[in-house]
Length: 366
Ligand SMILES: O=C(O)CCC(=O)C(=O)O
Image 1 (cartoon, helix red, strand yellow):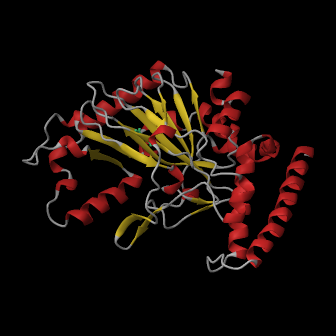
Image 2 (cartoon, helix red, strand yellow):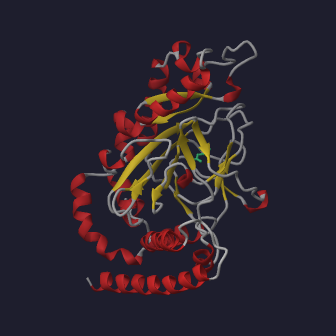
Image 3 (cartoon, rainbow, N blue to C red):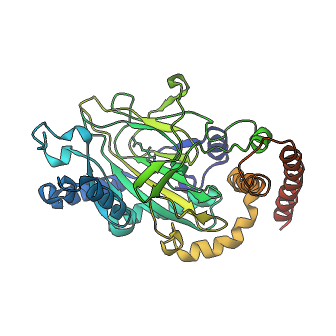
């Protein structure tokens, strides 16, 4: 079991360079069976006919409210293609649900146990988290025939902290293949480009944010167009965990096959050294949420974290704060038309690099 949760150096290097890593056999057969059985049970108890999402009056508001409230509930979301022209489900409700979310990890005992198990907190520790919380969870069905696509996105767009700290944990509960709609990723897309250039040009890995405003939720920028040739499929066996960097571009296609592709996906953010953005769709305060693992473990780990510089994620955090810091000081009006910001940025960049190095070597000494 040892290396299942604690990431091996190879896995960590792969994750840092590619933005994702697959950990095979992360979940036991018993854990997967327990989650699938529990989901069957939850679905049986769900009365699709009384669900408020079918309201014909004030549909947008009801839909938005249902979505927002799901942050703290176990809510059911249908596949777009689940309904016939008459507005009725074309197949049993069990085969019509797209996903169930977003607080399974908090409310449901079976999902809670898996989400914040010792091996999960070990894994988060390997990634450099200091006080991680699980911010959302989803059971995704990718139903046979009608399982909808998930368009290219980065998880940090939805679960933004300053600096960014989100990691997605995606556990296959069935074999995921190209045929039944596995994940596709652009390896390395979590790193935008040559880092010094990123600092100079104010670019970080995140391309857009998903915000909640008066009128509902929206993206602050259009999606860039991605070249399909850059994506690689991540075909995995049931029980495998795909660890996804918050800036990694990933997607999945429709499931046109006759086989489902169940997965449990949960997302973690740090609550130490970063700030939850209030404009996120989810307006919960992460510090009020339970830690991903026992309180005792993370209290201890505040001390153990001192060996973090070995871990690239820690550098990522420092690097992200550098970018934000430089942006905040040098670009108050978002204008880079004159030369002085460039010079100032160069100066600040080298200053911060030195700080980073000093901080790293101090920690190593400790
Ligand atoms: O399961 C899928 O198809 C996509 C899931 C995903 O993108 C996520 O959990 O971030």
